[in-house]
Image (tube, rainbow, N blue to C red; front, side, top):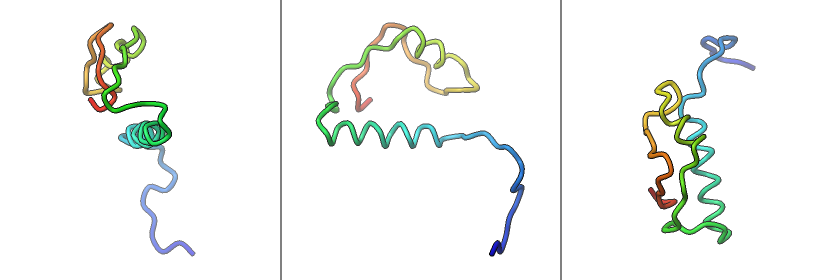
Length: 71
């Protein structure tokens, strides 16, 4: 029984849902020992390109740069 709905059939942007899923998967990988918080990850050209698109990201990443998993 539906008590309330608003814009039930309207397509909406996924907003931060992808960040939440990424966060969950990273935590899971750390828990399983597949990643470490201080492990360096190199930014690919593809990740850099996506990070420059303001409609997809608000955190521009350095091309070829490296960041720790925690960062």
